[in-house]
Image 1 (tube, one colour):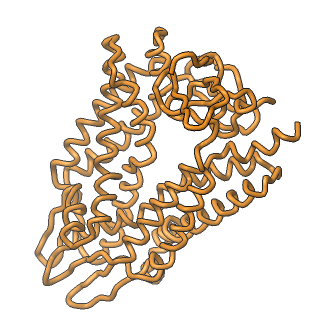
Image 2 (tube, chains in turn purple, green):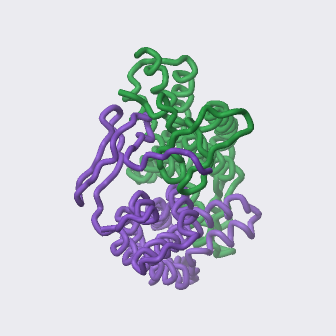
Length: 208
Length: 207
């Protein structure tokens, strides 16, 4: 581990490996690779404060979205209430545990762990602390980003309501509003977060 | 234009820190001084691992499209739907926009993604120097759209959750849904293990 020379002043494009100098960006500025056009970095201003606020708001909305009925389906005087997790339990009960697992992971677990990681990393930054678990959580958050599919789930809600609207009455439950809010705050949390800023902070630089 | 690789600089895949790695002896692995991830100049065995995921996805593509993904039973009447028959029946009922969304997400995107990945793998294998920038943009595009193919899996899970009125209407998932979900997950893994920097390496040798 020791003895390796690292170059924090350099940057290699993750798409084409071109070696470039680390840019210093004002908020709103974007650095793109001169060879392949990939976005290398975005100037985001105060990463910690914004990401912390948005991810805590998202976590609250996620708890609300998972604890109340989501949609109600009514047909011939009989009705059925579904929660966010009902699909998972029903698929599992029908013997499709693989589907239940993937749906549980991509629509509940991955977003929850991702938002918890963002909140604890940026919370620690606001408290000016450097904990040993922070590098692990930054790497975990980077990996989970691709597997958190809340916005795909929202489109699926729209598609299934249209599919069912010919068969029966669909009514929205309180969770649906929380879920729409969650899409908004969690995408704001993700777009205001920048792993590079956390690494700079952990390296000892001031975050501002 | 110099690449990090030509300077023996490995970019950490965990934190992005560029680090000079010594000419490694076998069985010796360098670790990132900042986050302790293993350092490699390129994703290890990127081509063979990506091929494995792509071939497995092709294999699952057939049952995903031939087996029923869901069955809607309404007043004791109903038949199993495959992905395609579901799209067609939505189209006939007059829901053309939704049918189109489902067609793009469930049929077009997985097929196009698999074909593009296969083509990229072949060009890397042949050390092609043809338009690396366009190929990189194409790679980033399929990496970005892949997640939207999960749409049908979520629709099935929502329908199964909502429609459980035993005597009147019930929705069941079908085995095709498992195969389809496998295609989506496998192509996401394939896109993750494919290293786009391999497309740029042949250009270095020219200069």
